[in-house]
Length: 636
Image (cartoon, rainbow, N blue to C red; front, side):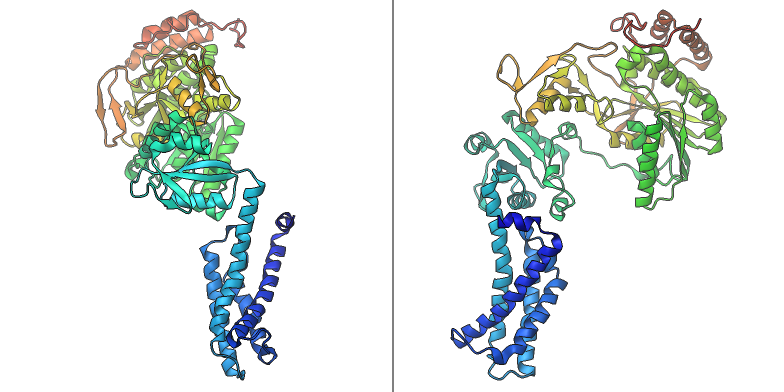
């Protein structure tokens, strides 16, 4: 077909065809103008040949200069029309000037005006007619999926026009809460009330709703998502329309609802003096720099202009990737921040002392940790060595190097823990609370799950939904706190600037989410129905697998109730009991001996006796590795 042939042509060939078409259209427009003015079917135009030559010689370069030939016909809009108007005006003025300066005897004075109008008609009209033909052909040849757009404001209307020009979707209706827009027709599409959605879905067979509201409030967006969820339609959010229309984004990047949208948390702008307080003008180290939190801390830190950023990571690949990304950020944003990559682990005390001293580190963010509950339960010794004794080695090295600020990234699982992972992090907190130090300010920041981190439940749910289910949840009543990684990193940095020594900072995680409700909503917002006893013909079932070793139904952020606010509305300071260093040091020696001897019973007894509120017995029973688990053997 002609359309397929044209589609396969190169960009330059298409531009050449457009120029050739205009070279024909412009003389025809001038000839038609003279014929209309003289009222003759075959006017004698040979005497006006100079005007015909000038029309093409001036108009074609003018159109090129104005960018008309850079326009893609199928996406032509107002910019192309303005280019034609300006080019036609220039050409008509030049033709008039030639007619009267040469002069051309008998050349009608009104011809330039008629020529101007006909140029608009021939040049712009043919292009818009071709655009309409291409759109009609696409609609005829390709079955387009009907979609409903929530939002009839500027964004919604622009999205509808974009969908009509390209893509596999056809907007069949608008929904809007604004009564002034309801029951109107915009670009041939009716604006209906949100309450009409159920009937619209039946009438149009639409299975997707694109949310294109002007409001940027996450709370407002969540209200719309909450309203749409029960209808079982796939709810999708659009990227920035400027990115779409410029071609930097495609319609394929219209995204599904993510858990961030379900949280409904409006971000609080960071306080600049707190964000930069412990970083700007300092040499900073981040341990665990290749992890989810560690790498985001590095991204945030490098933008606060430290004098040096030291990355410590035991994964070679993780270290390479974060170093490469940070160097790209520094190049793109013209940041003069040297990046030093150190391959190693915090359990290597000599390496920590050497690295801190060699780079004169003043602030240390300690994010290195084994965080997966199940893996640490199956690898108890290594979990304690890394999370607890690794923190001890890092803290002692920091004191030796006179590091000013040491900030531990902790977890809600450290509170009244039922897991070795949580216990290992609570012991790390206790070490920093008890260590006697006059030169180093120790503090810790405690928060819950972060979205998008490795091993997070959300990517697992998405994978299971894409595979058709079932979606696996541990328990019908289990709840968890969630926060985005960038928000958590910013709050950690701001908390560090408020530390006075031994502080336990708690981040405002909002309300905990019930995981089964989260799974149900994710299924529905993907356009599927939940299969259960009440809906045996549903698409995807939710299965309960039971709590794993060390898992709790509900996580907590606070051991006691003594908590006060801080300068930042989302950061609180807690006062918690800790064991004096004189007692804790001996206890840690006992734990270290138990680890060396792989004495799991002694480890469990130690944890439950030392950590307030801990209860490993109810969840874990025997800590020793099972026969099917790969575990280091005790030394002879």
